[in-house]
Amino acid sequence: MKQIADYQDNGDITIETEEGEEYRIEVKGMRFNFTGEKDWPYQNCIVSNKAAVDRAYEFESHIPPPKAYFIVSADLQYAACIPDATKPTWTVEDIKTNNTNKIETFYVCPKKELRWRKLKGN
Image 1 (cartoon, helix red, strand yellow):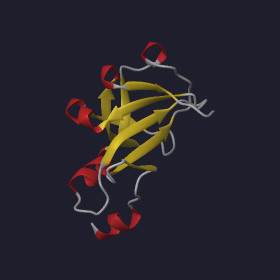
Image 2 (cartoon, helix red, strand yellow; image 1 turned 180 degrees about the vertical axis):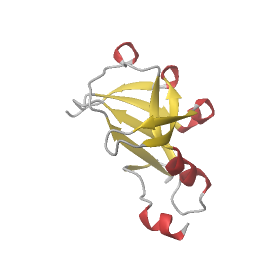
Image 3 (tube, rainbow, N blue to C red; image 1 turned 90 degrees about the vertical axis):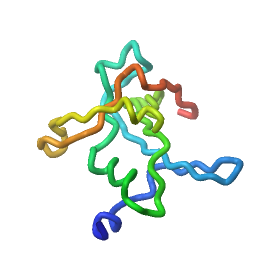
């Protein structure tokens, strides 16, 4: 596990609350545009690689698990938010990856659990 810890990051975004609590957010980009549930083309959404998620939740580390995953449309206008509270609804699927063409195991979240957000500042 030491080697894994050497490569583990602190997340893509860290948010600090007014109370001083820090929340880790993971951000993933999509290769297509979407605005919400009506034009999301799938019945579910990939959360992340299962092994990476399991490490974040089980590995005793100073790095907290992500509070949410933001899946961002290609045009950077919208995001599908997957709060960590939806974790009990996640299932495991073996999916062929685009970058390596290999089968990897991922957690996926049902589309009905996604929270749709318009991103500002673009």
